[in-house]
Image (cartoon, rainbow over all chains, first blue to last red; front, side, top):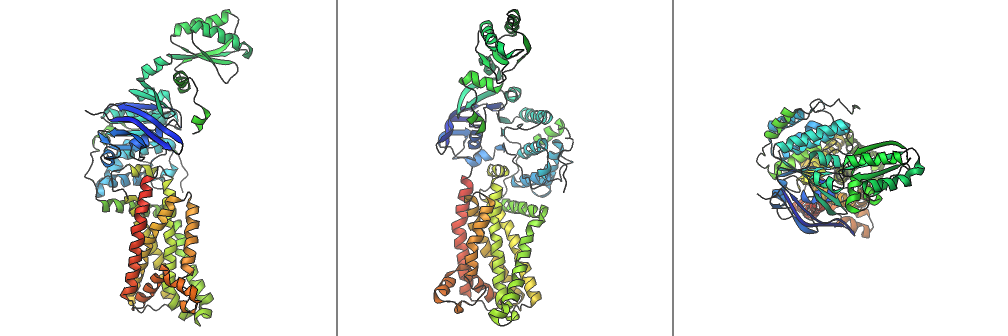
Length: 318
Length: 280
């Protein structure tokens, strides 16, 4: 069976800027594929080309076996899109939004209303059904958005930063919904800025920077490539930082990053025991530690490890 | 208006979700006509939720008709009553054409919303959102026209063409406005902000409206101006509407208006559709 998504050398420029600069992707059917990167890395532009909203300038893309340019209509019959801006009509009620889509997709008369109610119930939106969407909270809006995407269960669903700006509870709800979708056989392409989100949901991840795929693999492979964990240390005395940096670098055999906080440093560690030893070494050498934590690498750290540079301001602002 | 933003969110029910996913088989693809009507229905819903947006459509014609009739009627035509007979069909044209600018404003506003991406990723006839929106706008035109006609009849307009003549006049204006709204949807996709669309729309319409035969008999004008008024399509429309409302229309006048409407649509509807398809 052909893959759900297959792109070769996909390119899109806006003026002089190459937003997407030769992206190759292979997404297996029935999986969740995470596309990870900072704002402006080219994630949304890639999704828009795959969802037939933008015409690629170069390269090719096939979605569920159909070319996104020459067979766009066949692609549209099999996908649905939940965009970064909520793709629902704020000036209509939740119920009207779903009836509108149901009719546009071919449900007739009362069946459109029935489908809308079924979805409102499934997404816990029955009480808010008659209210204008502009009065919805972020979490409710996102649930409605996803409900709108499954009026007809799609073979492939694009989710562009589905949890950006949501509170932890709403975020967990969205994750549960995505898991249910996948369990029913839908393939999901998930764009996100959050490593933990990709980690929770994705079977494979592509890391994108400056419009290029800079790393690809399972979450485990990716994390292994940047060191399993990151040790964050905060010193009592900022004046000890240079000494601490030297000691940690020697003890852990890895580059130590100085953080914005003048008393803090961080370092990737492959194994927790060595981290404990290095911390003990700080104590023995008379560098008092105010606190430390051992955690999963952040996206910043993945970036640092993969590209040798932190996400630039430009990338964050773009 | 409700200000509640967050109802304690009811949990997503896994069973109901699975049931909803399992029953989401794709129905047969709807026809282009049915999709356009659904988009037209969307326009209606927006009017239903914000009826205030109809105030200028309904109130402006009232103001213009009353003001022009009673302020200039005596000076231009000797009596306000005589002037009303001359002015009313032109007022009908003016009111409806100004309303056509809103097609562009609405589309421009719509394009900034995320929902357009969803529409564009649906397997439906591509220009359907546009055709539907413009069809929905025809309801506004009908409303503006009704206000002018009813008020005119109350003030003493004598429709010699009878009900048929009046209805034919209104239909002619609405048909032309439908065609003209494609010009404004094009403008709506080219310009950046709704207010820019509104301003340029009105700026373009003002000379067309005033340099026409709506307010005065062109034979009283200097010859250069008379020529300008003579080639203005708005004048052709007014002449045809006056004709049918008086029960004395010439087929040539009506034919010219319809030909101009078809020409506007043939040029600007595809341009709009192309711009809409290329957005992103």
